[in-house]
Length: 286
Image (cartoon, rainbow, N blue to C red; front, side):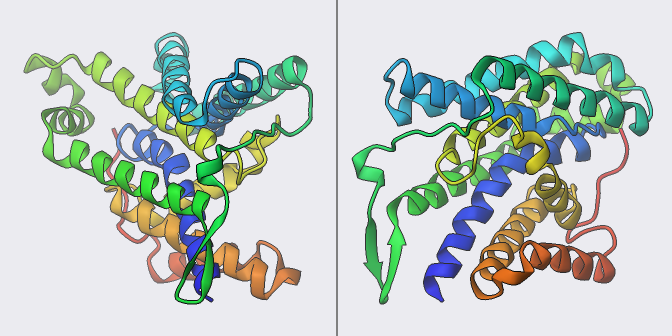
C-alpha cells in the first residue's frame, strides 16, 4: 500500500510540473494552449539527444531542457501566440491543435516514431526500504525536485513584484500599461516560464513516461484534467488535483488493472459534480 501511495505521489508531482504552465496560461492569461504538451515533448527530446548523442549527464540536461523549451516558448509566443490573445477560445484551440500535429510530424521526421530511452545515473537507480516497503530512489528524486519547484512557483506568484504585476496585467492590461508596466514582456516571460516548466517535466519524466512523437496527444487529457479539477485561481488547486489524479491512476492500475484509466475519469466526474468550478474555482477572464 505504501509503495502504491509513494508511486502515485511521484506521478502526481510530475503531472503538476507538466501541467502548471497550462494552469498559468489558461487561468491567468485566459489562453487555451492545447499545444502545451509539445513543449514537454521538446524537453524530453532535448534530454534524450543530449544524453545519448552528446554524453551529457542527466542532471545537467534538466536546466538545458527548461531553457530550450522556454526559448521555444518565447519565439512562438512573440511570433504566433500573441496574435491569438484577443481571439475566441475556439480559435485558440484550433490554432494550438494545429501546432500539436505540426510538432508531432516534425519530431517523427527527425527522430522516428520510436520511444526515446535514456540511462539514469547510478545514484538515481535502485530502491530503499522504508516501513517495510521498497521505494524507488528515482521517484523519491522526482518528489523532492517537484515539491521544491511547486513551492518556489507559489512564492513567485504570490510574494514577488513580478507576480503582482502579472495579476495586475491580467485584471486590466490597459491600466497596467498606464502605470508603466511592460505587459507584453510580462506575458512573454510568463509564457516562457510555463513552457520551460513543461520542458523540465518532460526531462524529469523521461524514464517514467514514454516520450515519443505521440506524447502531446497522449498526455493532453491528463493536463486538462489536472487544470479542470484543480481550478486555476492559484497553484494550490492544480497541485492537489495532480496528487489526487496521480494516486488514483496508480492505485487503479495496481488494484483494478482491468479498468485501465477509468479511475481518473471517475475522480474528475465526482469532483466536478461536487465542485463544478474545480477544487479552488477559476480565475476571471483576461
